[in-house]
Length: 298
Image (cartoon, rainbow, N blue to C red; front, side, top):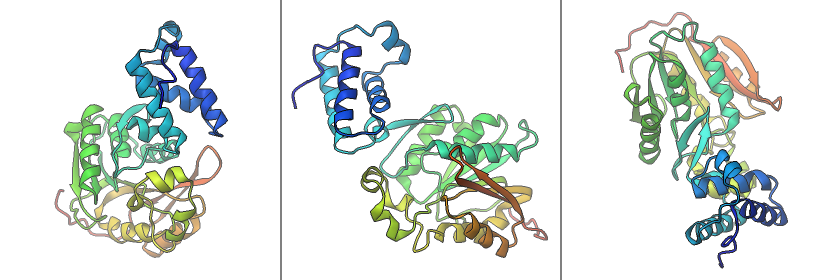
């Protein structure tokens, strides 16, 4: 592919990227073009404002053209850049991790609202941690908290460890390979999870950006999309400290089903939170009553 961006200024390159994405029918063409240009050229927004007339070098043009070709082929911007922002923090991605989504910030908000004293030594557990974005965001807001991130993927855990260190919370985070609650002991004040919740047969109908580029294991929730919730609810009761809170992200149509599963398992319901689009997004539950606290520290 010829270096179409060569000999252009940064502003001209941005306009050209936007035009090509718009012509291809990319919905968020302007935003995608800006993210690509800033990310590939290693710029901040102010660099584009102050030095927008600076010419793009041959190497920069080649890198930008290659990134644009990938976007035109349907690869998401975050995958092309290999990183994305969540909770105002940078997160590196890997082939075994999902791209952190703004909707998941609702889960962080709900979890933080369950902590009456943010200076307390809260213990957090993030099940299916992926990039570690939820756990890292919580620890960034809770300065004396510590946490464990669990995932079945060694590759995801390597990424999560790096992200925790990059964001200054690595000394308060541990990462464990395991299958939901089975590898764990100890008790936690917060247990959070954004588990796989797409019904198996629905995955083939998802947008190609998701279907072709997100790890299937992080999407597939089984026949009805509820497999992970069953596993979590089966094990989380014994991992919650007295007064602890379980906070789960859900699919837009799963609130009733997940709440029914939790009720059957004895979890008192603490309510439903919707995202900015008004869709059901997060459910939370208290520790079941009458449990004995006998776990050793993790």
